Image 1 (cartoon, one colour):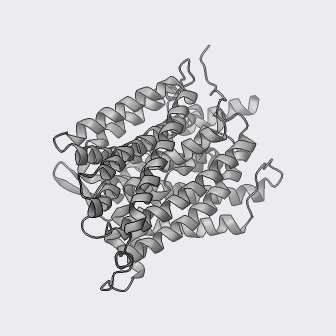
Image 2 (tube, rainbow, N blue to C red):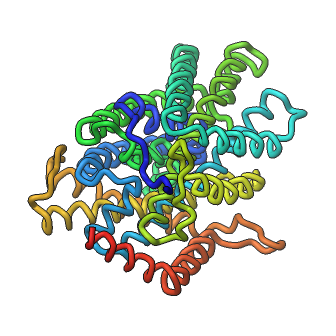
Image 3 (cartoon, rainbow, N blue to C red):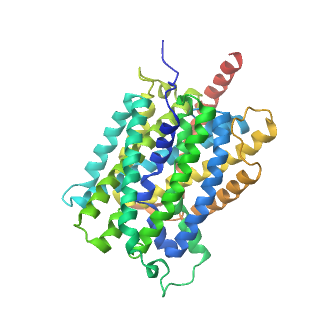
Length: 450
């Protein structure tokens, strides 16, 4: 008999580790591209707006994930609120986030290794690590979550080391440069897509909801402790990096070691230690997001949106093909090491679109299903309204300041990011029209009979 049931083995500490671990690499790289857009002050304002958004969003998301504990996460919420097609659109947005984020992380992993050992090819190393962690995820969710827990704790220790070494050397002049130009609203908005990288993918913990022992009690604990951890880290990471002069010059894929080297020198033990531990943080996110995209692919296939073979589980309860197929796409993208910022922006677009659709789903479910069991209730409608308004603003920021950038050369031609998004959704809509909608309708009939 084919195994189609995910195993319930996770506790709040595991969910905290998955949620924080998926995001922790965002403290080590990616966000610093925002310095080029808004300067130190503009980036700081953008980070503040993003922190407020994610605090409101994650409280709202906790209500959705405890009411509907489903491996599909946002796909399940949107489908229940707005129908199968809306669920499909949301699922594709979520997959864009979780498929494009890992290769961006892999690029930075290679940059960190190259910083330590210049003779090593970053592309070969990151591709090998990517493949290794796809294989590690075959061991089952409990083993994968344990690895994630250990890696996340080590990564947080690395951040603490960075803060301890850097805080005594923070200079006010670096935070508020005397000759800086006045902060422009356009600079703040242009920095938002990169500030989102501080928290991107924290919602991925919901995709392990079916594998949590007591989702109604444990999911809020895991999520809320996760957002508090990341909010504190964001403030300190931005403060120390900028305060050490890391907001000046061309952004690097290894901003923390680069900032420390301004004080201690590149060869110092503290810089090497933060670089090595930073690798663990990058690996934690890579590993965690692999868990997320595999569960999202599994849920979409189980519900009929994708081919059924993608929902097959091995004896450990792992969606093998849901791991391998999106992973292969990620490995190919990881070879494009020169386009880390483009991968970040594509992942952020998918994430923000999904965030907005999730908040819309919450409002619709509150109206249509007032008696739905909600073990955790957000302060409605204030908190989800703040999240939705900021989410729409952020979606505008990504489209306005990122989607027009031409940074993906294919066959020698620069392709704008919006064209990549259009292509992804064109293929997705074509599949849904030809095959997906019929499969989804069949699944809904089976569910109704059951």
